[in-house]
Image 1 (cartoon, rainbow, N blue to C red):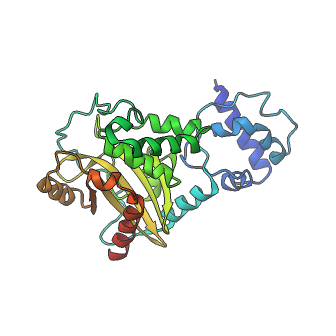
Image 2: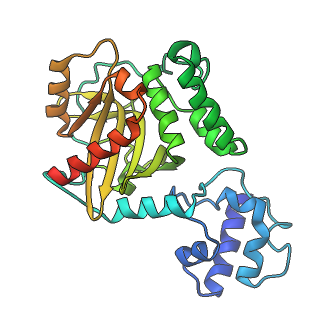
Image 3: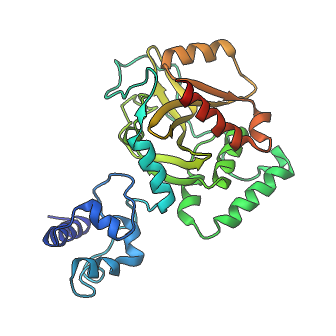
Length: 305
């Protein structure tokens, strides 16, 4: 027996094919950017469900009255963010990087992430007592800009953090125009074997929360606190980044220094993962102008490889 979602999906597909439209064309006409690749009907259609009816030439209420649109599904992105994603998707890897289609043989996992929730429980507050009035002003500015964006805050509040520096980095990216969406690393050509921290399963094709940003001609997508398997072990990266300039793309490990920075460990991780690393101290991340420096460094890295 079909569920309500399945019946709706079948009805939408039937009417779309009757009109001779592909999914991409239907989405384009609705000014919607498909992000997650999931097959469920997009939840963001619900507030404007009536837009589908004239598009497919059916009577008013054919979809919105007879079916209940799901409350979860694909996210909606602005045209600017859609352009950023297309730039990254179409770019080719540079240097020695190449897409990894499968995870290597399971390696011992020295970390216990099965119950790890991060050590910073509240994703935004109390940030000011730890980082000062400048951080408080940044948070308040971000809150003002995203006052009515429930999806943004839900995704932001669900992200794990294990330092205030990482939290500050996400806030700065948000102020630079970053959007939070769910998208699979493999969709954007991430050449790193992203895995499930509990079982070590390949999760590159699973939609995960990411920050999408365009700055200084560089298109970049950031996945925070994700386990990535290397040749000998599994590492938890502060951020896995896929950045593109023009038709050139690179996958980068971004680290924000904590008090336990170990240069030897950094070297071993870079060799084990085969990814270039950008590392910044907490003072650098917290300083004004950091986002400009970060994207300048990403551009230089892509041009150098």
